[in-house]
Amino acid sequence: MRKIYLFDTTLRDGEQTPGVNLNTQEKVEIALQLERVGIDRIEAGFPASSPGEVISVSAVSRAIKHASIVGLSRCREQDIDAAREALKEAADPTLHLFLATSPIHRKHKLRMEKHQVLETAEAAIRYARRFFDKIEFSPEDGGRTELDFLCEVVAMAVRAGASVVNIPDTVGYLTPMEYGNIFKVVKQTVPGIEKIQLSCHCHDDLGMATANSLAAVLNGADQVEGTFNGIGERAGNTALEEIALALETRQDFFQAKSGLHLIEIARTSRLVSRLTGILVPANKAIVGANAFSHESGIHQDGVLKEETTYEIISPLTIGLKDSKLVLGKLSGRHAFREKLIDLGYNLDEERVNVAFAKFKDLADKKKDVTDVDIRALIEEKLIPVPESYILDTFQVLCGNHSVPTATIRILTAEGSMIEEVAIGNGSVDAIYKAIDRAIGESVELQDYTIQSVTDGKDALGEVTVMLAQNGISVKGRGVSTDILEASARAYVDSINRLIDKRNTNDGAKYESVTLI
Image (cartoon, rainbow, N blue to C red; front, side):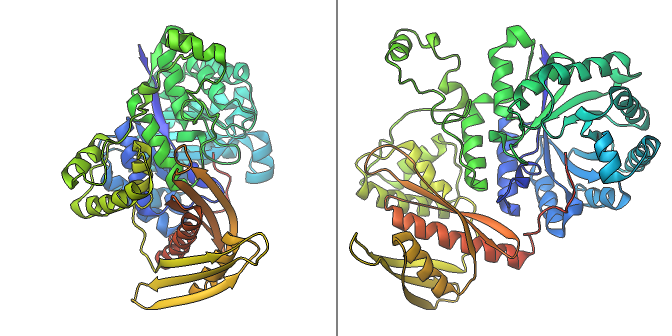
């Protein structure tokens, strides 16, 4: 059975999603879970884009021991040097070089002729070989590059010393037949192609990223690049969970499989969704809330008689379990700690105590507390952000014939207390205006999302808000059985994240370059 390597770019291409801006701790947390789920190569970022990016890539490099850490670089010596610095502590570093090759990019972006593209790329690969044993080269927009020239570029990369050549469908333009044919021709015509691995990197602009990647696998690709939940530029990237399950479920057809630990997929998807603030659509393949739901009476009858009638994948395969937490108000810390371990959380004593207090509070408010509730409570602040402000109390007066009025009490990191009152067009608007007055920050609310964590009238509500300030966008999260409290907590969390980004100079997004 042929092994297909998985290259995850959630931390790099995924972070290019509008509104996503991960801090160093969040990147490390995601990277550790990517290692846990069995990703072979983790693209940690683009070091030359900002000083903060060098710091975060370095932190990921130190934390990961069993996956190759990849740094992106343009074909410039200063970019390569920045990646070299960021990856110097990685157990298995890889440099990912890219240069555009398509006619439209050569003419309008690079203003280079074919020979100049070849010379620039070859010089960069040979320079990088002085410092890196493993180099991946990507001809950006390779899918729209003339096939004969693309083969010439790949042959150059092989000669210059690349160990992996990635052929990206940068703008999601190709069909599976077209994209698969590129790999077929490259495999058949490029001298020495057997010495390297071929990789595919697809975007989902026309909804064909997964299909195109699988077509590449059928035609000789050794590696698939993508992200969890399919996040990324524009319509996103290939969803790696879809690739892994397609290969697993249809081994008879593909005669290949990944090394992914499938049981960790659901947890990885939840973590990426929570830290990026991007909700997973209910109808998303593999990890969507409806992926294993059956409403049709005929379907329900069939599944009850034999699951495989309408369910080709068991939810247990990706780590989904529908179980009740059999702990209550009288349960002790030991039993609670064991439940956390069972759910996959290894927290220190301080965080266990905080989580236990939150559980006790929730148990007073809810009749049934599920595993999903516990995950939501713990993951609300699994990665702490310095709290410049803390929501102490809030009160809202509202009605369909009165003006919504919110009173807010905020505690500062220095220990002082601020109280403010504001009116608004609704309860949430009044709360946010009162917080703005108390904190004194000028921010723009770009997005506000509510979803229930579980079913029922007493379900936990999860609120995600996106705030922007001076070119920096962040997403905050709040969880509570009271949706107004969740809204207030999410807003204050976002404010703290903005201040943290500003203070650490970690808020810079990538330079204005088109990336693969």
